[in-house]
Structure formats: C-alpha cells, structure tokens
Length: 126
Image 1 (cartoon, one colour):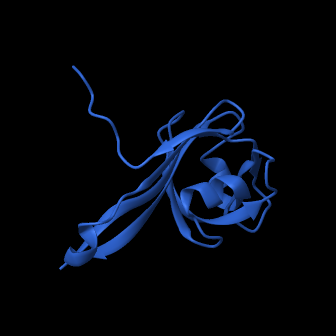
Image 2 (cartoon, rainbow, N blue to C red):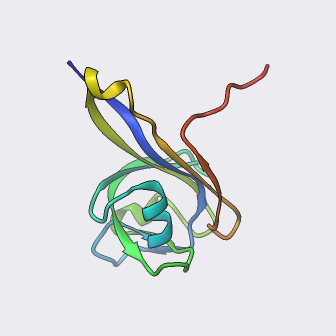
Image 3 (cartoon, helix red, strand yellow):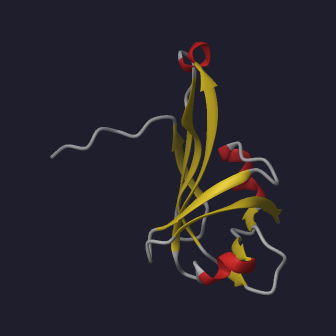
C-alpha cells in the first residue's frame, strides 16, 4: 500500500509578483526552494491564506536571496502581490518509508526570509 504525505511546506510566504502574461508556474526564491527540498519543475500545491483560493502549478527558480514569490499565467488570477500563501509538495511513500519520514516545514518573515524550520507541527493547546 502507498500513502500520500506532506513532503515540504513554505509557510506564509508573501506574493511579490503576479504575472498574467507569463507562460505559467510559480517563481520561488531558490534559497526557499533548497530549504524546503522543492525541485525546479516539481508540482506544487498553493493555498492562498488571503482569499481562500487553492490551486496546483509547478515551481521555477527565482534569484537567490530575492525573496521573490511570483504567481504566473492563469494562476495570477488567484493570487496578487501582498497575498499570503502556503506552498506544499507531497510524496507517495510505502509502509517501509513511513518509519523514517519527516516533512520539511519552512517558516518565513514579512520579506520571505527564513526564520526557522522544523519537521513537525506542534500540538495546539485549546
């Protein structure tokens, strides 16, 4: 049996550009891609915290240290500069891989600079 699990997450990145006339994809600062283990052209799921839109596209590399998060092509209708996003990737794992698997969760500040990362989501206290 195979299971689909969260592989990586960029949490609360800020959209810097929205390019409707671009071919497609989402350009992401290459430092963020590396930190999250996201490969160029890998499928990504985007959850727009600002307006509730959810969509799928692929990642392309933006200049390292630029803080760029550019939503391009048709997806530009779903995210605008200033919007906050969660960008996720998923992996299909078998039973054997589950024992050692840990996701990579990357958190950023207002300028899309990494503040910290971890491999679990802390329990919420009610």
